[in-house]
Length: 540
Image 1 (cartoon, rainbow, N blue to C red):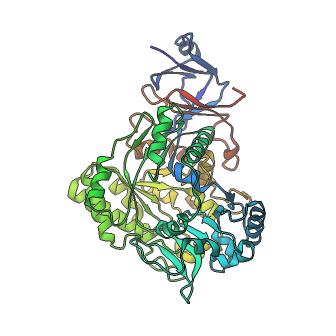
Image 2 (image 1 turned 135 degrees about the horizontal axis):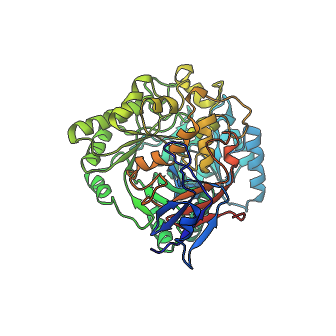
Image 3 (image 1 turned 180 degrees about the horizontal axis):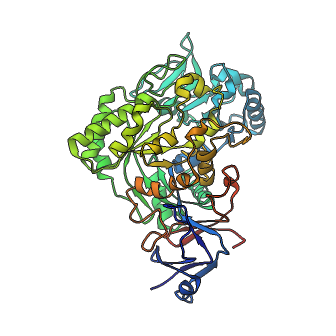
């Protein structure tokens, strides 16, 4: 048996029980954990070419997996001016003014992470930024990545001068006179202006992706469930994989958009299982609604502005039929459903598909930001995975409900924010993720947010819904055993046991006893993917 890697003097953390295994060392062979034992036993398995690392008591967990992220689109969207730290309109104007001074004449300004809360009670319009962006073509991505604020010059260059009609729930927001305000909702509207902006070269996009993936590995991630296959995504993954430069194991779900015909669904079915050593197309992503913050979620009652009243699919029954076809073909689905009506309809669609074709397929619902009591038990009853992003609650809402998300929903629905605790108690499998680039990808921060539910930029502020916090063990399970179960890989991933993948995250201390507020700063000492080191701290 060839043993390329041996780890000694380790504390091996079992994510099922939260206790340390009796063994102190492990050996890797053929990308799998070959043996567990004491240091003497495992050291004896090392050969002349084996990498032997003394962990000096560091804690080994199964490799941490982000349950929902967008590597390629995120690498593109996060290029430009980072506005995510701006908490007020003056700060946004100041940041934009500084960027404008650095721009070449006629160059486009790209920004990302814009929080609609900076506008307060005012509408989100480019007019609020006009003094700074006068004559400058600018595209500012709002934090939810479902909406863009375009400057007047950008709209002019794109030829967008009034409302448009789309096949999905998208909108060029206009004033009472029919003039665009600059706010573009959902991809179909955003793309109208995106197409007019200069695009990076293919080489630049691939380099950005490689940099981002390397940083994810350094943060402790060994895998991710990539919720899109847009553009060159699959080609980039294949190229990096073939070159031995892919540092994450990726499970990719291409999109099924409204209007996808029978041939399109057949193509999605036929594409399942394609991939390489470290990436694979497994599943299909669908959208049942947009976001609460921009009024495109699907709620059972309108928000305070009379918005969020309809599904992303103009005909929700067409979504149900599409999911049923995918289910019948054995394809798992992941449905973006944020509002209570969207979640209910997605669950109804899964129930119908199971009634027609059995329960052999594992489906997921993504986000689940507000749901009433009667939906909770249905996740476990139907075997639907609850894929949640607790840092969205931490960083984009407030405990006093003065934020845009909470104001739109009102007290009753805002009090049902990100019900991780209730879903877990109801028997659902809760998977945690970042939805990067919407929120930061470091997994320790995601687990911390699930535990403390406080704004990551100011941990002294009160938590939003502390009764919905997960325990330290549940948070770890959300990025290990539960992520493996969501992918149908619980027989080979998410645990430290012989025969399981040697995807490992090594931390300086026990994440279960580290305070939630300190967890994001816990050093990641080593990240291992299939026995290959993708990150090694200098202290090891």
